Length: 90
Image 1 (cartoon, rainbow, N blue to C red):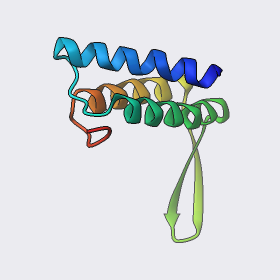
Image 2 (image 1 turned 45 degrees about the vertical axis):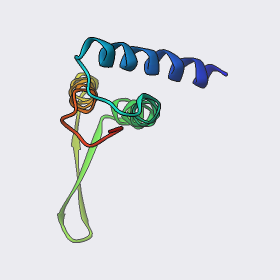
Image 3 (image 1 turned 180 degrees about the vertical axis):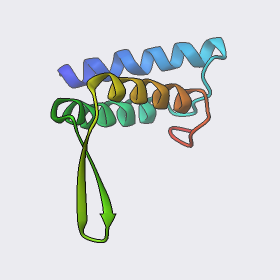
């Protein structure tokens, strides 16, 4: 129930943005679910603060990322998707 309530709020915000012309989204429910799932992963990334990449095949390198960097990326990605600049939920 709590998840559905969050998704309902997020879908409503997206639909409001579509109604005002700020967002270009064909399926607000799909985008809301995608953003919700991405947000769960972002929470883990922000909590761990670990950014992992591969310097060579099979050779991981661990770096750091701040919670603020994760937040900025998630906000920018969500707005790009809602504004029709990413092919998510369209």
